[in-house]
Each structure stands twice: as structure tokens, then as C-alpha cells.
Image (tube, rainbow, N blue to C red; front, side):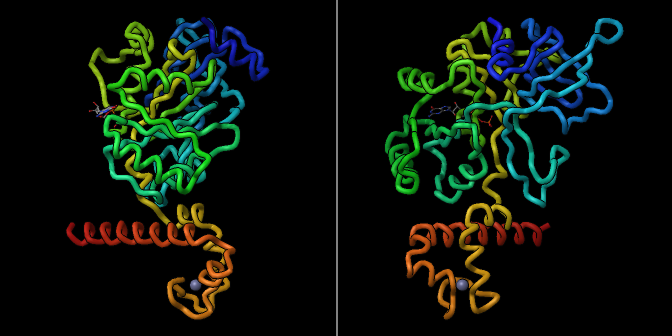
Length: 327
Ligand SMILES: Nc1nc2c(ncn2[C@@H]2O[C@H](COP(=O)(O)OP(=O)(O)OP(=O)(O)O)[C@@H](O)[C@H]2O)c(=O)[nH]1
Ligand SMILES: [Zn+2]
């Protein structure tokens, strides 16, 4: 099995024994699966920083003194998955307001847990954040053993996105996990995304055969596992694909003006034409947004989602303000 070579071939990049792929990243230490199939930990040359290299990247390394290797170059990315970070919580992974989660990804699976609170605006934020050219997007409703809730969520999503492919599954129902297996692109790279507790790690463990966990898992400190804190990539033989498990999001539900602009750009643009600067687009005369709803320029459903999103955002802002006052 040598999938790195296959991948290079597929994307017409020449592959040597000094090439590999980043499968894990911790501080300044990278775990690289080399084109020979070895798993080696490496550091980088000084002019590469942790903001330059991500899980999924193809790299070039050199032999460096006493048997160690150093990553010297990141090969051009075919795609990357990132999320916008809010201005308030800029992390050091941030490049131009984007936090890259993984590179060279072919498929994104958004997991929504049937036992967690579901709102369309939150879901839309996921879709708009992760909708990428060249990367296919799948929706998985996890914890399908809560079957009524799962079906309700499915029909609510379909009411807005009738063309979405949605798969309901439960980690505790083997036949549904088998269905999920059929969705992975052979020799591809997929990332699992979803809020904390959505069941990503459990799914990954279901897909892995136990011996793979041993070969994939690199022990750094001899200690056991694990709620996912970093992004890691595993080769999953049962589906012939790389799967990336990312830490669950807490922040995707918090929002800011940029989120709103991405989600409701049409309304934001219309709002420039409103008669009053502080128009709330609910009752004002000369409101360009209300006018657009009347004429059918934007749909009533879209307008309602905008209002619902605003209600959530305002609620969060009030909540934040209250917390601040309490401190
Ligand atoms: N009822 C039910 N519970 C599940 C299912 N899959 C996972 N769980 C449980 O949900 C909890 C969270 O599962 P994880 O797989 O750790 O969730 P995660 O998405 O990896 O969470 P983070 O690592 O925090 O991002 C665990 O207690 C699982 O046992 C399922 O299909 N049905
Ligand atoms: Zn208005």
C-alpha cells in the first residue's frame, strides 16, 4: 500500500523518497508519513513556521545530521479547509483571519448530532464556512438512534437545501456505518467536522480496524487518549482513504459581523438603499429589504432566516455582555 505515491501521481507532482505527507502536528514537531510508508517525526527549517504547514500538506525534507530529517518545503496545496476566526479570538494559527484546519482535502463531512440542539442558522454557518470549490460536502446526521430527532433535522435541512445529500447513521448500528463507508472517495482525503460530542472520533474508530489504530497512532509520551484536541490524519484501510479528525467546534456558533455578511450578503447590500441608516428592516418606511421581499427579489424564507440569525446573534451578544459585567 503506498497511497502517498498514488496521490502524487493523481495530481501530477513528482514524488521522491524525500517527500511525505503531514499526518499530525504538535507544536513544532510534525509527524510525516514518507513516500516509503514510514512514519517519522520531524522539525522544520527555521524559515518555516507553524502557520506554513498543516495536516494534509505534502512536504519535502532533507537528511540532516545524526539521522534526523528536516522539512524544508511545503508543496503547493490543491485545496485547504479553513474556518474564519472571529476578530475577538485571533489565534496564532490565523492567517488573514482564516484558520487552516487541513490541506489537500477532497471531501468534507459535516456531522450533526441528532441529540444536540439544531438550528438552521447555525447549520448554514457551517455550510457557508466549509463550502469550497473542488471539495465535496456531505451532511451526516449522527446518533441516528435518536431516530425522530434525526428525521426532523433531515427534513428541516431539506426544506432549505433540497439538493443536499444527507445520510443518517448511528455508531451503534453497524449497517448504517457500512452506508457511511460507501461515501468515502477511494484514495481521497476526507475531513470530519462538527461540534464537540457529535461523534466524530467514535465514527473514526468504527471505521478503523483495531490494528490500524496501533499503526496509525504515534505515541509521544506513552500516555493514553483522548478527546480530540488537535487535527490528526489517519489512513483508513476499510475505505481506502485518509480521514482527518478535527477538534469539535465551540466557536462556530458564535458569530460576528463578518459571518453575517457571508451568510446574508444580499440583505446587507440591499440595506445600503434603506431610507434610514439605522433601519432594522422590520417596519420602517422606505426599507429596501422589505421592499425586496414584497417584490420577490429575495425570498420570504431567506428574510426569515436573516431575522432568526440576528435574534441568535443578539442573544449571544447579550450573554457575552452579561458575563463581562459579572466578572
Ligand atoms: N447515542 C449515540 N451516542 C453516540 C453515538 N456516537 C457517539 N456517541 C457518544 O457521543 C459522545 C461523543 O462522541 P465523540 O466521538 O467523542 O465525539 P467527537 O465529535 O469526537 O467530540 P470531540 O472530540 O469533542 O470533537 C460519546 O459519549 C459517544 O459514546 C451514536 O451514534 N449514538
Ligand atoms: Zn431596511
